[in-house]
Amino acid sequence: MKINILVIGMLFCSAGTYAQNMFSMSSLHPADTLRSESHEQALRYPSLRQASVTTDLFGSGHFESKLNGKDFSSGESRNARISSFFSIPISSWDGNVIGATIYHNQQFFNIREANNQLAAPRVNKGDISKSTLGLSLNFSRTDAIFHTPVIYSAVFTGLSDNLSSVRRFNFNGSISFPLTHTPDEYFSVGALVLIDPSAPSPVLPVVNYFRKLNSSGLQLILDFPQGASLKQALSRKAWIYVGTTANTYASFFKSGDPALPGHFSYNTIEFKTGPGFEYLLGQYVVLGVSGGVNSIASARTIAKGSNYNDAFIKTTGKSVPYGEFRISLLSF
Image (cartoon, one colour):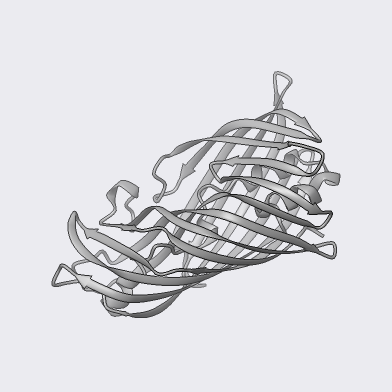
């Protein structure tokens, strides 16, 4: 693959797959949820739904990048992303839940302007599409320590850009202590351990808080570090909300250029902020539309076998507007 095509994928303000999400805490909820509550929980937390297909369109944004500390390239880029996942329940018994999730992400990039500061490698204007696949095995268990409820969870994820090999294995392990659990309020605290080369920290605090603020359906939802929102029911099947969600993404590349590692990945940490609307169509189909500002907290290119602090390309980009459409399925 030519170097200009390889580098295009490294420089966008957003890229990757939902499968790599280091902040994913979907295993924190199911084992702590009564069967009668599962429908409401899936409406509250999109990561608990059976399946989802999401299309994101991003506005044009400016990027600047450094290669091994030297000014590398800058310019204007624009992209789009189609992400999907499908969750498969495997087994549940005595407070234990096992499931699997299949992910796919298709990215469409467009470099509109490129200013190169180095003779090689170079970034050229053009288009590229990139596919990433993922498979996760999820486990969670509800137990008690000295009569205090506790939830253990583990998520093993394999990522690739094809069906013949695995490019990366990630592990998320967490422990959470539910302190309050009523129909109107839920509060838990804990910690999330990340074995992930693209993670800036190996341990993060976990805070999950939900509260119904009034009788008209206004809800406060905090799922740190994944996001926070205020959600208002318009009817029994329609909601509006405003909030921020955090996600991480990865895409994988192979280089034949001696100036670059043979295998590397481009990794971003992104924040979406803005309003949205969801509508329950029938019993199981949820339609959603949202928009606002997409911001990049971190964009790093990491050689295979290296980690976050060893990134050889660091990219910064201005926040850009985005629009999103999502169709998802609740558990049957």
